[in-house]
Length: 579
Image (cartoon, rainbow, N blue to C red; front, side, top):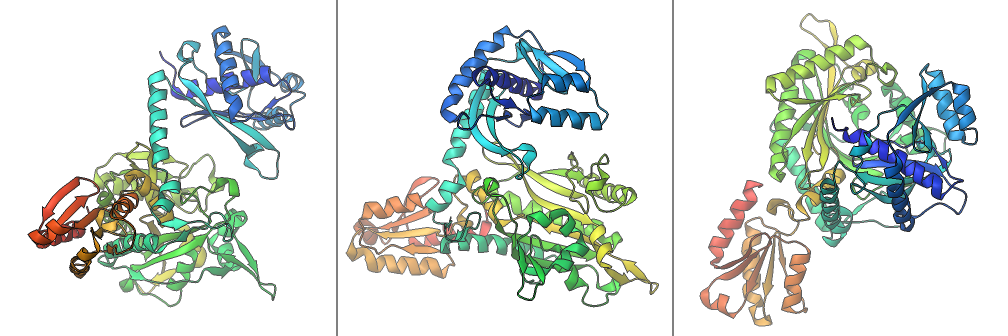
């Protein structure tokens, strides 16, 4: 029986630690888990002696030298005192041993060749660790246990797969991903920029990028408006009290940007919108006849992310959520979820995304992470499971993936490179309405608690665009492209005709760039390709003689000479389809 890929990857982490121990005898090894594409191991090196990326080949070479000498992973059960004696010079292992003892778990070591490590187990057969199926990829910094107040360690990452072919396939995908990197393509397409004066994680949107954002937001709004949503607006700051009541302050206070007024009052910049929306609902008494109330709001939120975690648009400090909240009765939850389900399944296919759903539920082994009692969670999760059953889809089990206030349906998709992303989410919340005392008057004239549904279709516009740019390699769909058509006259005496063509396109609602600049014809066409403009219309002598235009397509190459009417019909239809 072959070993699991997780066990293979964890075993390579042991091999990495063994090689580092031989090459850097003073290094202190800490932990080395398997991750999605391989493994890593964190080390403390003597000051000035930590390896860099250029040293990885030497470490790899030592790993390949050690591997044939290993016969397997021998489990050694020891007392805590024995383990502490073995790792007496390593404070990180001592901390881990004390933690294991405090949980009443067995202290175990694993030996391979001359290398012994503190480990719970889960290893591969040596025959399944192929010397040509792993590769060290990079060196990074990482705080011990992820705590910025603790020691900064050196983390060495590695790739590991079951075969050389799988490793090569993954590396080819990574090479293609670099070509599609939104952090490079976004500025090249003149969609967004970052400024050192503004600060990291705070993207600035150009006119072209703002056009794309607005088109996306309008698409989502068109789907919501036909299902009874109303727009609301909220401030970007709030008193601390709002988040204390909602429960966010206790859980997320370290992630908030805080403001102290000159009078000493404590405010926070909003990291999410839901508590504000509860107060719009709470402004007046409601009859059950007036429910559901559906509020939609695209607005910027702010989170104090650590500098090392920021990454282009996918992890930022300021992001716009296309947020919506429904306040309804329990009997209305199913219908409201299904409405949002339909919105999600109308939005994502427009970009070529197929969807799977994950039922993200709480982790019953750690109830302290969540608001509300176990009965409430069981009821809520069954309600979402019933919706999945009605839709007759196979759902991914997302144990431990729930929001702290309620379970949710997360929609998952894969991009053109096969990478999986969580995109839209629908969350059921019975806790926050209870904390804010949100109610309606029922048929008997009695006060009845309402429930709250959180729904973000894109999640955040920034993160969605980071996925979409890489999925399409920057070739945005025609309807979404900031410039849809570039009109290029070959010579100056073709400019009057070019103006006429551009005006006809604009009359059809198309976004047009009429290039009358002094730069050469070839440079104008190359610029259209660099900006990945879907269509270029060229006007020269032959076009004017034929009372036509020459159409070039970004995606299909030379289309040929066509009448202006046929071009207008073709592009108008394509724009309407949102394909």
